[in-house]
Length: 483
Image 1 (cartoon, rainbow, N blue to C red):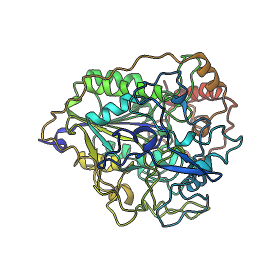
Image 2: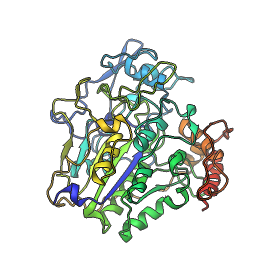
Image 3: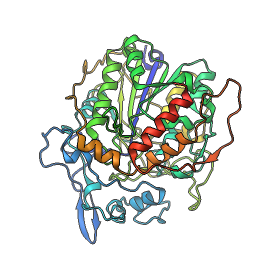
Image 4: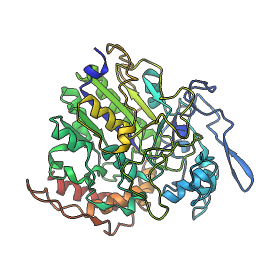
């Protein structure tokens, strides 16, 4: 029958701010010529001294929640548009139409104030034994080593690309207005009679999407509902999962989004929970699960992002960036019983050319896959029109690859010092923007047929600590959703 006829459910888990090399660069080691991972010779420079990529000294050592490497890099690298231009080109104003030399990651990290204590932190990478969940899924099913963030921008622009195929010319979180007015794939699914739900832990970023505001109380559910929907065989056609972005001092929960310096161990737990739920579900044989990250968050990757199709011609200012280039590569693992084990999912065996195509995978490949799979009609933007879809790599004629029956990871309890330090820290860029968004949400669900308010800039005051921002934001989200 094949995947195009057999898949009825697509599940996407999008984590935060890790590059491909930092998470999966040593998945196949020593370097496999059929896999664009690390060789170990990659480096940047700081004050004329080489700063090479580096893993832990013990490739067989498992990661534990209290391992300091689980929180590298710390402090959080820069992720604004200017930071990313410096990381790629060595200069915040250096963007051009030549392949970026990928030589400014350390330089950009060491421009931060206060000065980071370790210039090599952004060059760190994990052994597969340290990220065993995502590594096991990558080798049991498929890993895409040609998946790029949709734009060299912060979290929100890239998350809007996965939902709408554009960020409407905006590169930084703080520059957005709410609600966000681009048409979304969620609305398209509803218009075509397909079901969808967005599952979240604390504050869902997708609440900014204007065209689903009226439906939000019906469609947004806590992650625990995803687990029960999977167990009951009632998953919708499309499930999008957002991680825990804030520390929760009441429930003793640490962020599991993997946003540096958040602990990657908790992200591994989340990936395992999602996979185990899908694998045990009556829906398993009919499901495609995609695990990816929104952007690289300042972590090193050695592959230059190619030029891209501009989604809509809108430009970011200053800089006049036309969104005609991808961001840095991010991890992407494709899980389905239709995926041959050990697959390396790619569009070009010799590597993606800098210009001239074929287009690599990016977040809009999810939109393209949904449009084709569920017959949703034409493009949302020129970017998702140009994107490759994921149905071709799902090449088994029958859903015969069941992979591991489950993946176990030792359960953890957030160490009290981790909770205290993350809770008392100032909100990071993502937490700050989410706090402003939540503060400006309507105070209750919008009545059916009502008009959404006109877009307004994010101007709400942000609490001094991440814990207080979390407490305020969760109350406001629950009020808006009526839960």
